[in-house]
Length: 331
Image 1 (cartoon, rainbow, N blue to C red):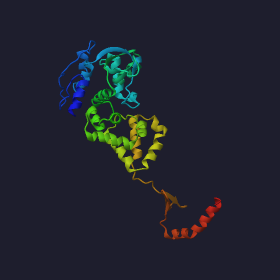
Image 2 (spheres, rainbow, N blue to C red):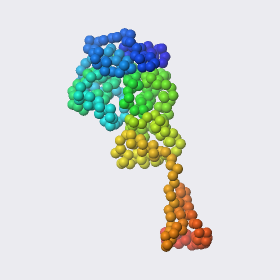
Image 3 (tube, one colour):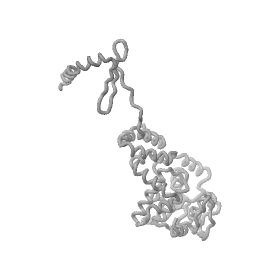
Image 4 (cartoon, rainbow, N blue to C red):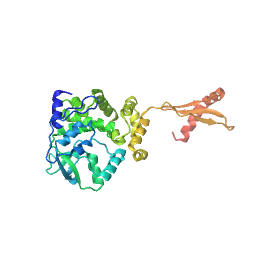
């Protein structure tokens, strides 16, 4: 990470240095506590390695906001299907039992006075709404679009419940924003998500090979990691016919009724080539003995006849059989 980017992140997240290797957190250098600051007990609920997130909350104004004035981030990082997540069910159980323990982070809406956009804490907002709450405890900071993306990316890099493909899609949003604003797209992804260049490249090539339509049809696939997504990408690149098979699959009722992880398994199976050919159909005589085997191929039908005399007999009759076929079918 460049020195300039380090300094910028320090300013954005309350003047805290990045965590050194090994996971140990650095002390806050310039703690800024607002009048309605988050209490120490609330900050301690965050994992130690989320030192930037602690600083983001500590330096913000704290308020209880009406849920009705909270909008999602303009750069969503989740696919549909959050309700399928086991982690989301656990979050709702925690909200029911203990209430909201850690504030969400929001910024004032840049185009709508009195409204706010969520930086992180989307699932807490959704959970509180579904549980019938009217308000959410929020840390409020004025952030530019770039600062919002970086804050969201830093938070994403520490989350275990965001699936690999969701992180890949968010990385693409970071790249698109950077390119539109004359910035280094790859560097922005590396800095915001705390990943190395090879992982950023895997995100990019996988999305390009699989395509948005199929990814959205499959969904978040929370239990599917990098290896399997890359296997799907490779299968699609290796077999052009796989796209047609997957198109038929995604239109099926069974596919749509399955959970996201199952949809991924179905898609991967459809994309992978099979070496197993269907067994030839057998034609039997009056005594039940096999007299011929018929194999349907892509461009022709193959007849295998073991009895050579019978094969020569068929050969002599082919012209007559074909004439009879044409006559019966009006050709």
